Length: 112
Image 1 (tube, rainbow, N blue to C red):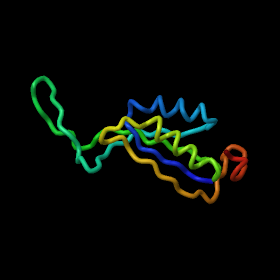
Image 2 (cartoon, one colour; image 1 turned 45 degrees about the vertical axis):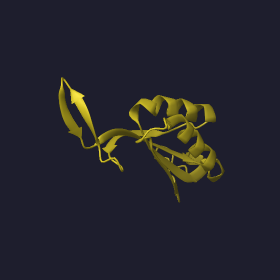
Image 3 (cartoon, helix red, strand yellow; image 1 turned 120 degrees about the horizontal axis):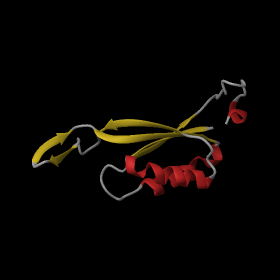
């Protein structure tokens, strides 16, 4: 099993969620996050005053999938989140050793 973690722009969350649902992913965790990459934040203008935004708002999406589906799910997320502009986000894949469903005690694949 693999944990796929994606950090994307907040306005792309619904596109990513819909794409994952269409692919057949049944569960996900979404967390609000903020950070910066190479651009180190950006400047905004509010009521004529310019100010620095050091930490850019993002959304972190996490899904656990079977090994064979990880490349396809990664592609689905990238295509749904992509705008072609700086700050689109990142996706990374991590191996998962064990999953336990708390309510029933089911393990690994049964817990998905």
